[in-house]
Image (cartoon, rainbow, N blue to C red; front, top):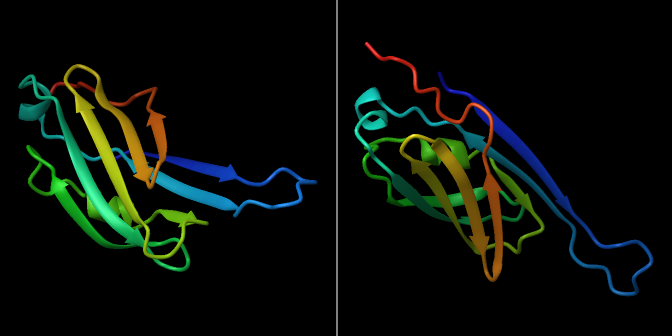
Length: 133
């Protein structure tokens, strides 16, 4: 089952400040990327690392998966393509780290650009460890 968690993060300047910071509106969707049963039950813990740049509208471009083992085609690119990171300057390099931990499932997503880091800890039904056929 492919469930999705959608997070909308709004960061803006406080009203009344003399110098307004650039408004940042982030729409980051964490896709519950399917993990085959043999990996779920095989005591596997791994991370997938992706890098990309943002265009003028904050949409990811030039997405590259640096490491995604043991999922040969995990769907990370398709997931990141749905993100919008408005307010990050065009051409900024962004790095996403998806973390799978055995017995827990998808544990967190970290998004880093420049010196900024957002960590999204996942809760709820992160990994339905159901019997597989």
